[in-house]
Amino acid sequence: MKLVRFGPQGHEQPGLIDPAGCLRDLSLVLPDIGPAQLNDAVLDRVRRLDWDQLPKVEGAPRLGCPVADIGKFIAIGLNYADHAAEAGLPVPTEPVVFMKATSCLQGPNDPVMLPKGSLKTDWEVELGVVIGAQARHVPVRHALRHVAGYCVVNDVSERSFQLERGGTWDKGKGCDTFGPVGPWLVTRDEIAHPQRLKLWLDVNDQAMQRGSTQTMVFGVASLISYVSQFMTLLPGDLITTGTPPGVGMGRQPPQFLKADDTITLGIGGLGEQRQLVVPFQR
Ligand code: ZN
Image (tube, rainbow, N blue to C red; front, side, top):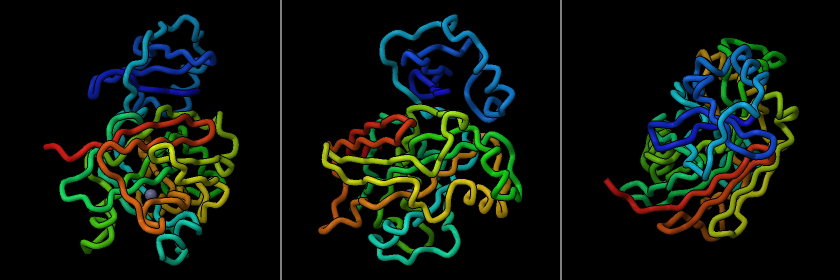
């Protein structure tokens, strides 16, 4: 199932994309798509509905982040060996874990705003994993049962804030608009092999990132198991799993985002995003 939230920011309604590609309204069935709806029982109930009876949504409304009320936005750093190399950093022996502020979450096609004083705002296409069932010290072999679904994430990053201002990476990762998610939450039954997904990202139609989840250092199941040793993962938590090579910081010479750039990105089976880069505004 491809679940969406559509409508103006802060007033999104739940929906799904039917097999013909039509947006169907789920608001008479579910109050929203959030922590209380991501368990297998609720998702199975939606799956069994006669989708032809759901109201069709006309036009092309704005899409929001496909999951409401995300409690934790956890990110994994340097999880592709070739990206670690372009960043000039060693491949980690254990996953690098950091947090993105949940206030940076937004819809897949909302503009990305350069933060005040930005020098090095950069792009990162990533596979996002949404938790559906609480996970605490889960073994790797059971970890994927705790997944509600998968989505595209752009882990937008300000490199000078992240790497040159001291302290943790979080300063350059949680700026407003730095967390486009979606277009859809694709439930895990549709993604049989999360380690065989192609990822891509272009800036102004120029190819920047081309990769596959096949080359992750730590796969999705290992990451869930690992993170669940340090914090309880709750329904609605989002883990973004690292980026393949081709970020602006790794180019010769380095290239960063400027106002009026357009970022397009996607993952096979999970849809595409498009963001216009805009200058800082209060
Ligand atoms: Zn990242």
